[in-house]
Length: 520
Image (cartoon, rainbow, N blue to C red):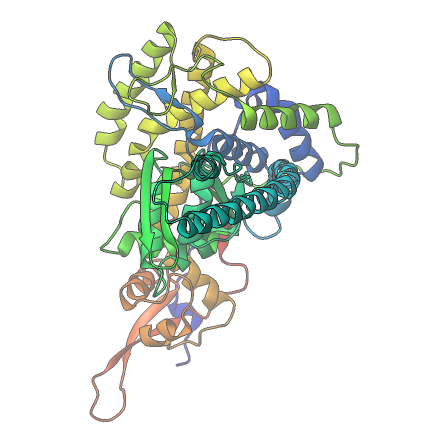
């Protein structure tokens, strides 16, 4: 299909850019964490968002179901500050090393807890063996006493026999030591139930590749995983499971935090499936702290000693939070025995009410895509959760406050605005699928991976990202026809089959015609 270049228009550049996002201002990072977070970001030359978001989710996981916030003064609405989050960035953006700086603190807490458990376990084993021997000795004396009664043909128990029974009944088993856990990287839901039974505050599930974890819940045989984690998001539920062989496991607080990282292309494929799926259960919308920051454009070489003082200050806060008795620090004990809670101070309460009214009347009744509105609906609990976390970080740092202050509330609201812009970028990747598919198809043409005269079926067979369905490929081709990249012709298929549409590539197409900005 040789074409005369003069019959073709100059192809228009297929430009795709991500929606803009708000930057995370240093003033919105909790002051006790600020120097530590900024120091890591500067030394790594990575977005500050990676460290800050990981730190907030980690703090939320350590607090867990230990306390809650009461967003209204009189209502019994209670919010456990359990958070799910993640970071998005192309390979090489140092997502994993940045997050590892935060997870290192939790690893230290885990190591300290394991050492304490091992020491307690040794003592427990020795005490258990001693009591076991004592029980066997008493049982032996009881057997002798019973034989003597039978020989004497006396049916009434002697004083010695009664004394032995009382001694056996009074032996108390030592308390079994519990290995305090803070996070896990991989566990079945059955094992998670057991871990949560021993750790009622909850756990953090951290996976470096987050989308891989979510996709695994859709595999055959793991149908129950997805519903388990959906229930664990609120943080205030309970679960009792009865299994033959495993017995009964009662989980007082079903509270699991989730965090991980992913690449734009992997997230885009998952988003595409989630939006097109008929059974949207709101799983992805629960990742309230999901960020996709811009890359640093002003990279510079930084080689300096880490800020040890800032790092130690941050670690001390994590450790204090892990040991904190929230009732002793001002939490109100719930009259029904539920989770103790904190409240807003008077003026902070008014600010929260104004923000909540705007959320309900404006944002949740807007014209945005339904999946974005579903995401924003989770901000009802996000804002008070963040305000409580910021408040507790200050308490753990030694600051005194009787309730969640105006500063904590305003900072939480600022975070909601920041996170909303990232949600718009992330969901925007999937809601404008036709344009993005056209950009992917144009790139493949430019790379010479499609010969002129290709069909929709040929493209679908390639199984490229966003180009696996006939409908989307056809729409992408239509857009490239409008921009002068393609022309449609009809070619005869094999005998007995209908004619097929063939897409002829503009011979003026050259390398680097496509302009992309942060496109996955």
